[in-house]
Image (cartoon, rainbow, N blue to C red; front, side, top):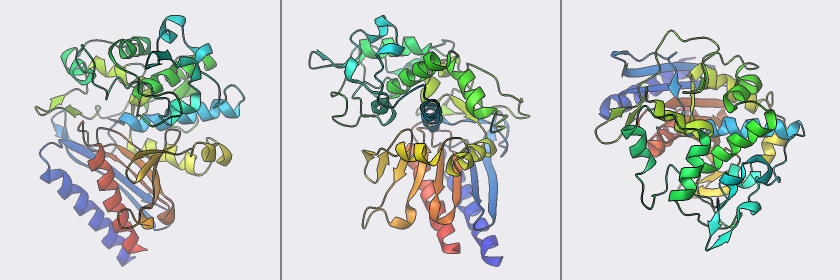
Length: 364
């Protein structure tokens, strides 16, 4: 018992010190849960909306939302309504399909399979990360046009008009939020309901994720007692939490949730409640993302690399550009969930998660 208490104190001290020392982080959230160790910590640090941050507060989960999109696809595959090998052609309007994915003068759109979009091997452009030829970058537009509502079709159209594709489907890896917007439209076409309604019907309601919803598109099942956490962009740290322009995230990362809700989701995924074990295994169709991390169908896999990434750190889940993370560490049966709420802190969020894993391992 003493070791567990020490571990919890070490995690809390590390988390609070990390947040307090970084002037770019205004508020941060962390939940660590392990049935194996008997640990459950749910914390918040900093302030938001001029009040102290609260551990029950909803926050934007950014690209962690891609795991929700991929699980929705998995559910529809299990129901026989989709296949990972289906092409995208029947699901998009002709004007969107035209010249959607042109590589060296050749239109490769009809070669894109659903699986290519899921693990970022389609080669299609990325509206969020790629540099546009003439227009302002999307991050600038989010800040500069705060009242604009972006329909997913508009985002895809903007992407194909302003960005270059990278390679034919299956011939490489290029992270693409545009690809996840297409997946959102495929889900809408298949379910005959808006993407936010599909999230609610297939995931939020069954798992009683009462405070989760798609930002700027829907409302939670139960309103939180706390405002959505502030989220910051850029060197001048602009708070964009109330920007209608965040509608742009859609199926690539537009979900607002709480740490407790995310724990419900991840437990259901790990324990094969929401999708089967065989579907989860199919989702582990890995492509190399960055050094030490592979990417499957909405899943990041932190893998063993001798001298750099030891086996003890092996874990899987997803992370977002705001320092959000949702991971499961099988060895410790531990769930690590949180966010730093600052755009560009993707790597810092993952590093925080891995350092907490190291603390947990000392307790084993």
